[in-house]
Image 1 (tube, each protein chain N blue to C red):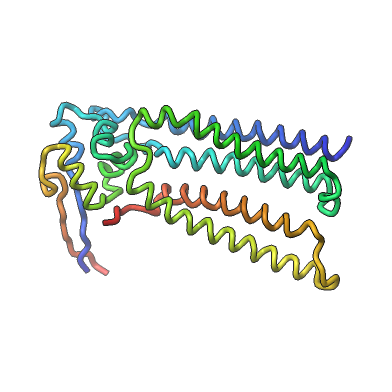
Image 2: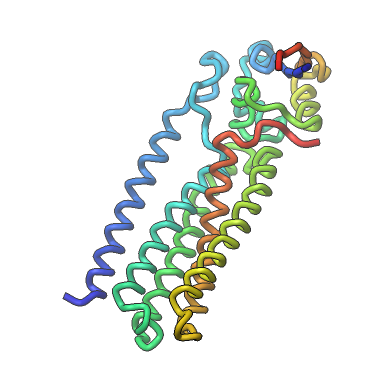
Length: 75
Length: 196
């Protein structure tokens, strides 16, 4: 069975954008800081709209921020 | 000493318990990280504004429910409607709860608005699912009343005149508490994917 995993580079991109805080990113992307924390921890997968807003905050394409991996899982 | 005296003592105790819970919950919240990238992601996730309100709502709701139950039990369910003072006391407790919750919302709103977004896609999804929990809680409360009244008053073939009022208040409060519990369950890990 194939299981999809979505990883992101949000934490790295924050570093590269003047050490942007989670709160700053949340304000600019239109979400709460809690959602940013969960995204960075890989515990939340955003909607397409939020993914686009986060990517645009960094001036990047969605696929430069989010990475979709498909791996085979037994069971 | 009169039962009303004990009810007031109990109410004061519950208020103190509520303040204790508040300190415990907000103390946990303040242990979260600052969000600075140099720290990385904090282990503890900061509370969302809706989550904080749910804790407040649940705390106030539990205190008010317990106080109302204490007053009705102290006065005696059978005598509740005959004593005007008891009735007014219960209305006062309920109103105090509503006003207290509104004051908390008003006092915390300034800080929340200054710190950013109040409600995002995850909060909205959790809120919509919490409404289902609220409906189920209300339905279960009505079911419990129906079963209990049928069993207790089967022989009499009639229920006391105060019971419909108790049914309404208990269902209303249970649905409100169910909503808050549903929100907190949502933040505890129900919701991990955005929609759309």
